[in-house]
Length: 168
Ligand SMILES: [Zn+2]
Image (cartoon, rainbow, N blue to C red; front, top):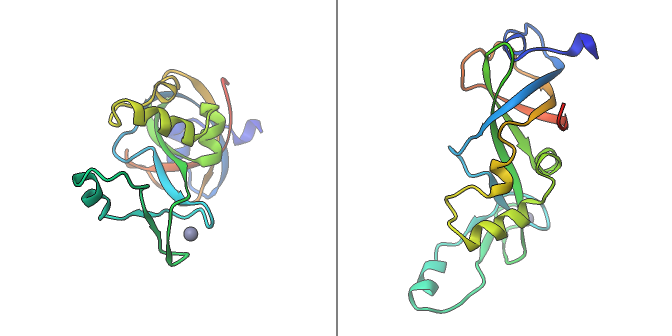
């Protein structure tokens, strides 16, 4: 494992694909994109909210939101929320990177489901990050990353997290 350990800077300069281990400090939760998406509970793919909900709101009719699943080719009412969490991280090499955590990895880090957090956020202002998300800022975490396309030197390069060990 020692040989797999890299700094962010070494990871960005990697000349070959492969798995590596990086210990980083979480600086921020990236808010350029939503930290979760809504998915079909049958196939787990992203669903699209149907626009005609707004008519219902205007007419003060309470309807369950309707979603359309392109993969299942039908409207669905039962949906789930999945994490799509992008963290801005740094380490002792002073380099910065973005790490993308899908549902399982994010759930492990946050220790709560995306569903719970979405419910919580809906009660308050949806544009403010839930406390459970901002709580990760400052935490030091060991991440397993698979470098697929190497030479991603630019600052915006995003690495997908395979696994993590909390509070490294
Ligand atoms: Zn579906």
